[in-house]
Structures are given as C-alpha cells and as structure tokens.
Amino acid sequence: MCAATYATSYERNATMQNAPTTTTAPRRTGAEYGKRAGLVAMAIILTVFIVLFILNYQRWVSINLVVGSVQTRVVWALLVPFALGLSFGFISGRVKFRK
Image (cartoon, rainbow, N blue to C red; front, side, top):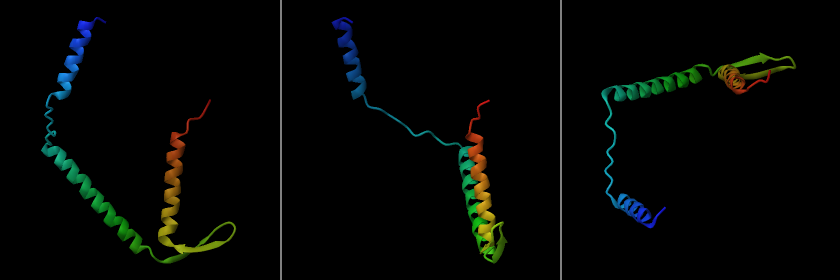
C-alpha cells in the first residue's frame, strides 16, 4: 500500500467518524400496533385464566402412588405433571440421536 493511499483512507475514516449521524426511529404501521395490542390482550387474558385456575382448584386431594399416598392441592396435582411433560418433551426434541 502506498503512502498516498494510506493518507486518503485515513482522511476518509476521520471524516466519516466526525460526520453527524442522523438516525430516525422506524415508523410503526397500524398493523404493528394491532399485533402488539393483540399480544398484550392475550397476555392479560392468559394471566387472568391462570389466576382463576389456581383459585378454583385449592381443594386438597389424596394421590395414591406405588409406594404410598400423598396429600396435595388439586392445582399442584395438575400443574406438576404438565410442567414435567412439557420439559421432557422440549428436551427430547432437542436431543440428537445417533444411528
């Protein structure tokens, strides 16, 4: 690289660094606002349903296991197996098996 090329590329970089930058936020369309409003509404409805579900199933039940029985609330008897199945399904979908 010759000295003249180096000087011009250096000057070019110096002027680019000192140049004022004008960034404008992207404008959102009505569809984007509608999508966001829909997501917020669904989150609120889901939260209300979860709270009502927990409040509705506060009764105590006896669960008979192979080695004994346990007393627990209905909500835990429903949510724990659901969470375990969801996590095992997610993990098994990520594991790659060799053939």
